[in-house]
Amino acid sequence: MRIRIVAIATVISISGCQCGPLPCETDSRGEGMTADVCIPGGSFEMGHEKLPLPKLREGYTSMPRNDWAPAHTVTLKPFHIDSHEVTWGQYRACVEAGRCSTEALQRYPETRNALSDPAFENLPVDKVTFADALTYCTWVGKRLPTEAEWERAARGTNGRDYPWGNAPPSQELLETPVSYVGSQRPGQVGSHPEDVTPEGVSDLFASVSEWVLDYYDPFYYQKSPSDDPMGPEAPVFLEEPHEYGQGNWVSSRGERAVRGSLPSRFGGDDWEDSRGAPAWFRGAEEPGFGNGFRCARDDRPLEVPPAKGLWR
Image (cartoon, rainbow, N blue to C red; front, side, top):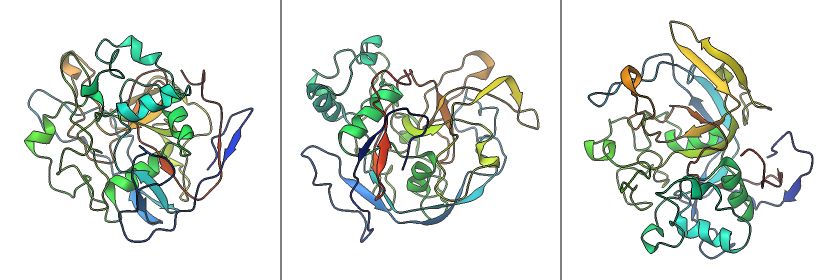
C-alpha cells in the first residue's frame, strides 16, 4: 500500500495476511497492541443507490447529499483491521515513546487530561488529527484502513446495512454518546455486544468517528477503480455549493474521509445526526480536526511519509 504525494518515504515491512479461521489471532508484535481481525479478500458491493437517509430520531433530519452513490463492485485483497478503536491507554504509550503528539488534545477541555486520567484508559481515543492517527498506526507497524476496507469490514460479503446485519439499531445504541462533550463520554471499547460484526470487529456504529486513509471526494464513487481503491491522489476542492443532482448539494475543502458515528454538527432547520446512519454512510473532516481511529495492515510493503507536521 502506498500513500502518494510525499517527497520522502519510509518503507515498513508488514507481515502477510493469510486469512484462516476468523477472527484472527492477536497480533504478537507488541504488548498492548489491539487484536486484529482478518478480513478475507474478495468482492463486495460498496456504496448505495441514491436515497435520503432514514429519519431515525425525532428532531433530526437526513443529510442532504448522496455521496454514497452509485453502488459499485469493489475487489479487495485480504487485510487485517483492529477489532476495536485505539484507546487512550494505547495512544499514551506512543506519546511516552516520543512519537505521538498531544498538541491537538489540548484544544478540547474534555480531553485535555485524558492521557493521565485512569478513567479514560480503555475508552476510544478522540480529538486527534489525521497526522496523529497516521503516526500512531505507523509506530505499531500498521496504517489507516482505506475507506473501502472500513466499509468491507462493516458490511461483510453480504452487503448488510449495519455491522450486525440489516435490523435497525436499538434505541440504546442510538442514544449512546459518540463524542466527548462536557461530561459525556463514549463507552469502553468492545462494551456494546450489539455493535459487533459476525467477523468480530466492534464499535463501528456506536462509538467515535474514525479517520480513514482516503482524501474525500463526493463524486469518487462515479470513477472509483474496482480493485483496491485508495481514494483520490490529491486533496479535492469544489466550489461551494456544488449540485449533486435532484436538489442535493455537496462541497469539499481538501478533507479526509471519515467513517462511523458523526455527532450532530448543524443547527436550525439543518440539524442532523448520523448516529443512525447505515454502514455505507460517508463523512468528511478537515485533517486538522479531531476524530478517533483504528489501524489496518496487509501483506504489501507500506510507504508512509513522516507524519509530524503534515495534514494538520
